[in-house]
Image (cartoon, rainbow, N blue to C red):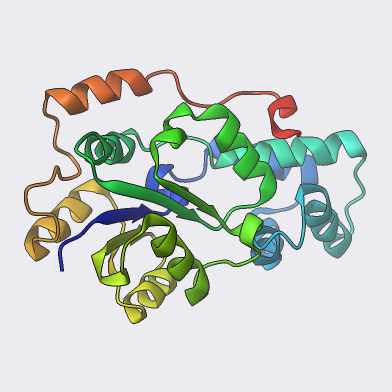
Length: 237
């Protein structure tokens, strides 16, 4: 069955790894050591992604657990820096997604994402509008690896599971997609992804990540400057 839609995770696929400056600022604001911060940062992340918590309640839980007292302005800065930490873009992957779109491939973003991050990417990244479908966990109150969120995204793309290629950095999400019949490749880097797609011949006749024909050079030029903002105002409704 030919691939008719490509579904991208956002974090660590369309975006780069955590921005170190924003991460360091989170440590400075909270005053927590790296290990303690990481433990508590991820403890409630799934609830945040599910929309059961918002930015303020998520950070308040972390602060309560760690005995840190901060004011409203400092909590707003935590929300901002957390968003900015995940806002640096993987240009090569965005160029590839745009090249697929330019050729008529249906594309989707399927991301576990809290509401502040979702609002930020929707306001700041014009390229988002070119995706056929945007699926964010906080809106649906469903998150990967729940099977329902994959089925929902395929339905919105108008394709069967076997016609979808799913790309994500987390093995648990890849395995869940495969269980439903999606073609799924774990993302580590562009070179590895290109090799695996070519070896499996999943996209015959379609551009591959890392290709730089003229159309992709044009797309890359159009992405210049579409990075991050520096004020919390864009994160508010």
